[in-house]
Image 1: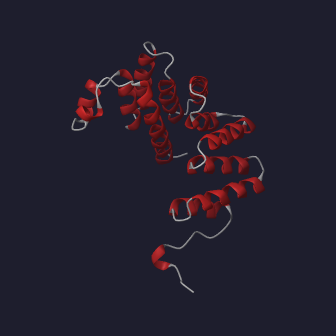
Image 2 (image 1 turned 90 degrees about the vertical axis):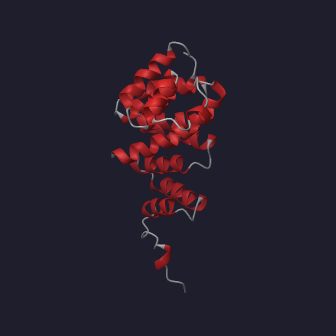
Image 3 (image 1 turned 180 degrees about the vertical axis):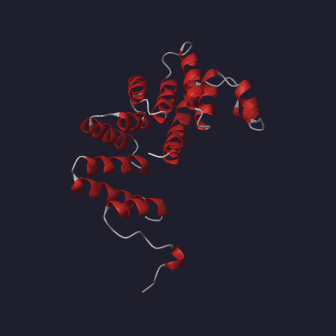
Length: 202
């Protein structure tokens, strides 16, 4: 998986963490006071978890791990910390450590879909990965990312019919999204959709 794809996955995951973050109040400074600050200034005023999120979003994975680990000493039961550190481990391809952090996040926040998806990505056992991906979709049925990964897992495990069903569902979920249409078309063995300006109208 290339760097751009890993970054896209992390961005999607961090959006989910932001929702969890509201409940656990991990940042010491308000977003209003930080809105006009530079990257370096935001790092200076942020809590350890705040630093880890900022660094993770900036693809500085090792530093994100360091600050998340530091924050865990004060908040050992905060699931968002384990999720962010798990994402950083995953982007460094340290999958065993990432899986452990995603599992801990799930123990603390069993309804957090992104943690199941993150753990599925790291699992060497594809059958277990599929179970996690199904759980992620159960919790977040409108997530295109979860649907793509489940379809690909079915393909890798020699289950083409199940994969096609997931690609069809993806296409039905958001037929006007060109990225999703391209994913689904490739999965279904269809030619890529024509750009809007080139589409032939009968």
